[in-house]
Image 1: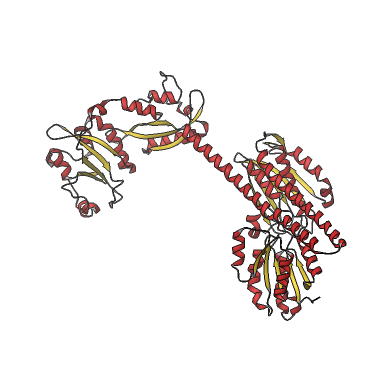
Image 2 (image 1 turned 180 degrees about the horizontal axis):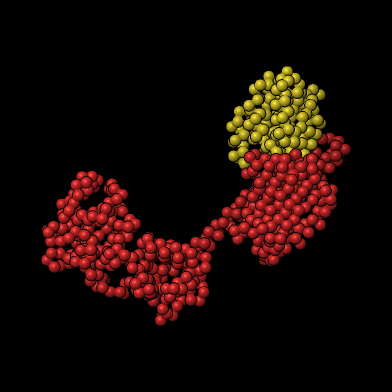
Length: 487
Length: 138
């Protein structure tokens, strides 16, 4: 046994691991060290054996454990992938001794990054032969967990599936998997992910454990947890990959549904919050005005004064009406999302909007610059698109710059596969630092403007988001604003 | 009939209906001599900050302020933040009441915790309440 001075000197584990009563290996810079307790337990003297991995794999390890240990060991040396397994090692007297072999993932000991430690714990009870030999447990377990096994042999250029893999991928029992066309087992959007996993595993020996969408023989997409580990020969060459596919489609779709449901609940909750806000602030202010006025009517003496008050009641009832209309608009956002989306034309929709507000467009002398050439149609709720365009266009006119007449640029485009609508104006702009985060809130107005109601952008945002879109704004005071909607 | 002894009161509120009603009540009941009305916090803080330049003009400093919370442009909270900074520069006691339709306990406690706020009044404000406030400041 060779052990270098430096290795013995600076071994950080010295205090914890006592050489004579702990069975372990240390592996550092390509040299092996086996503890004296390890040798003693097996009955060897240092002169009996060669301390290296190929001697161990060829002469000492029990046949049933060779492959598993070899892959685990090399993965640990190369990529620090921790493992634990049962192992049988040949004693000097020719009998096999059973150990539990593990790396120190869970041990709280200081370890230098470049040295790797393996522990061998003597097993007090031998694994029952019936359990060990029988495939019954493996098969039942695979069936219960919907897990199939597979193996890719790089030497023979073939891949192998067990019956369970064929079953979850809906292939017949005599189907021979193709290595060349392996991409066809994966959904298009995940072919790249799959090839990355397999290439890295075969070239670098990096194991993978990933969730991926696969494609069955019947072209049905489903979620799979795929685990793959490299297979080594005795010379540390990677000669294959083996692993498992577990059908996790039920769980995964439950998680996705849950996520969707929780998103819906969150957005409904925020609408409810706004609803409560209108009720508590706006409806309450009307009702309190009514109380104040009736209080006052009772208080004054002359009939004339009492009658004069009636005019105020009319004002209050009008405000009350418009608040209730706003409430109604917010509630219908929710109910309308159940309606069917159809192919809507941007230019036809904009035409309708322009026609409906032709008077204020004319009075304000508004110019349009329209470009729908990159994206002319959208699968959307027609009423929403109209309402979104109407709100953005009227906003641009309402908050025009005092010194110039409004110019509104509207364009649509596709970027990164996503569809966008942009509405820019040359209006008075908004101080984004001050109001940026409140801009889409309800009853928030930022200008001294009699027409400002503070409901338009709130509704636009809700409409966009109820169809899973996103709205953002960029604005400079005195220059103008650009609203960008991602559908 | 006794003469009103509050010289100037100030209402900061964007609800026209409410403002007109309170104005009418104050006039009818002769609760104060003059009334100033602002429809948001910005207009009014601009007024008070300008007053600092002419601090001896006592007749332009209100004895009572009724401040709404929910307003456009600058809301009541933003107003209070800036008003608190300059309040002590006036050599006259200004009593400020927050008057809001919000019954949210968070709003109420937040307002009452500010020492520039004399009290938090929940709308609808009653005529007797209004009278009592003016009598207190008289």
